[in-house]
Length: 105
Image (spheres, rainbow, N blue to C red):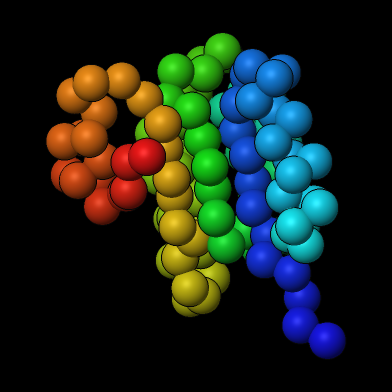
């Protein structure tokens, strides 16, 4: 049996957090972090996340860019395949995504 793809959703909006249920129903393993600080705790807990889906403007000290960078760097350190970081933001964020090698949605 193949392990399900693990997805980390980093979102401070409770309505958007419910997307986690849809991912589970579709067969993905998912976790939700409501802020950047909790996302880093989740990423540091040892589970390998293949996708990081994050909002840019999060509550707390860290933003979505920092979470995505940390997730990608952590995977590089393990010499494993980097997660695909998807970020959602506002106008102008698409250019920032391109410069960071992330994909904007």
